[in-house]
Length: 283
Image (cartoon, rainbow, N blue to C red; front, side, top):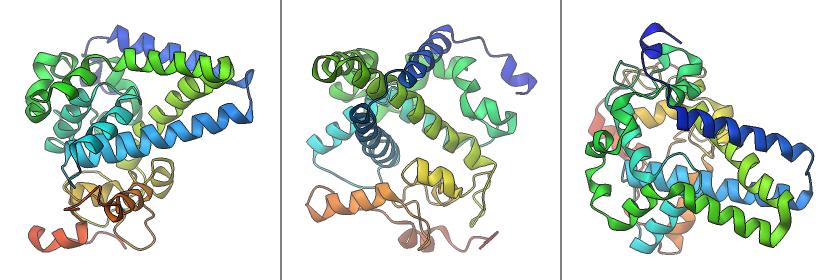
């Protein structure tokens, strides 16, 4: 972590919340059950793939496809249950990342070091992203939506409700795995897109930053690890552009399309002509 990162003040709420979640996640070792693991795995797919990958990222941030409003709100709720901030904060931070990727104004600039890009940026919060009044300007379209604004202001309370429901249904084992183990795992898989996928892997396109296509991050994050492809074609709802680049979230989107629940899907292959010829850096 470099000197400019250390100038940011500690975000004590974020730091305390992250530590508490990880400590409770460790309790999962003593409360193991296959039922609890199955619940955690199902919620991981629901919140990480449907919620973060499709909802927050490919739909709300980049508008890579269209859906009925109720589907949009469902995906937004799923993303909110990943507890990575509310949808407005998440989208604003990601739009800021694309506008200044791997430069000083990038919230998780990977050139400040792996741990800064991975999670340090959440613990030493840039004041521009630490207050609603500052980051709202990067997501004015979402601020104008009362339901999205409600999710942004109540994302912690929604998780509390989910936790209580899991306790009532399956007991503490299911709650610990379904909330804390799942959150810790989801966070690190998402954070690896910011850190590892800017340092490890190959670059197919000259995206004018350090983004990489990292296969193992893509497997952990349902396709988000094909990050160089994404930075080359940000509005593409398909991130795995080569035949071997498995993109689970895009396959789910195609299923939604077949059901009439998604349309106008933007795909990188169709956007190449608009971008012009780009330099292929590696096969």
